[in-house]
Length: 100
Image (cartoon, rainbow, N blue to C red; front, side, top):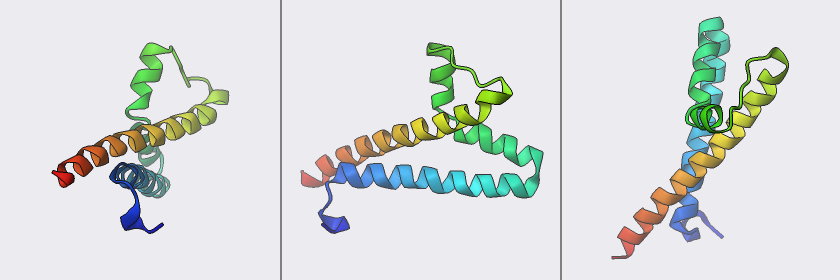
């Protein structure tokens, strides 16, 4: 099954989640190159938008040192899923508009 044969919602989800992953990798590389300020910038950008939801609705916190890495991985996984769903919704809308 080639890229052109995929449903538009799947294309949109893969494109947006792929962009999110690429941007996070670039921010992580830049964070290590810039030192402490860059890592803080990476953590802020990689944790948005799921950080607001987890902190306010579920009282999820990664303030302790032991849970910080595990919390960061949870944030990255959940954000990738959220960006896939947003991209799938955008792709679905674009697919419906193309068919008209």
